[in-house]
Length: 268
Image (cartoon, rainbow, N blue to C red; front, side, top):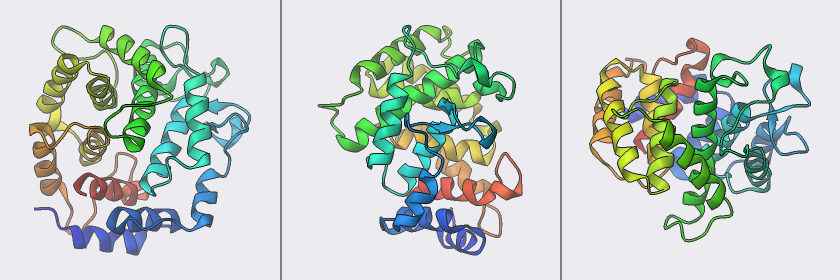
């Protein structure tokens, strides 16, 4: 069993203002104060994206922009003007073949999952960006009868589906899997999504708590339903919760609050 009260107490004790605002929205749907939105929006470039770091302040990043979209979603303002500008930029950054890559000038300091020109990074970023353009459409219209990003998301899903191996695995990072599964499912590549989910299920016992939480949140952002994979993930999160109410992040103790918020969102 997941101890929700203990997890809430951990975030209240250790979280910053943005993290506490995320907690309030997760718990009660409370809208954030304007200064919280402004804090996330700080650094957004005129094009609509965010830079990868302060050193690359003039170049928007696919990976960094998707991270900010997740923060906006966690406080319930994904469809705000700030989010819409980011989504429009993200859609405009898609390449002709349906993929996304970071700008080549970021190659010197990009992490492996965002390295320009790298096939594994291209699959990850394409799954990630396509997922977010699909997720915002679901948030706006759960029945997906309309979306300004239909064509963009569909072309990314078509490309991602073509990269899967016969057994449903993918030649990229673990997180590619759950973003691809959500994207493919919502774009009606149901067979391909089911194969990816089977692989994720087989890897679940070895996943870190933060990865389990991130996977669960991603799949709940689309119309997957409470299927077997999510049921297994909730059980795994209950087993991995610490006695102080938190969960371990993949990046060390400084990010444990974020991992705990993600776990709370996964259980909402």
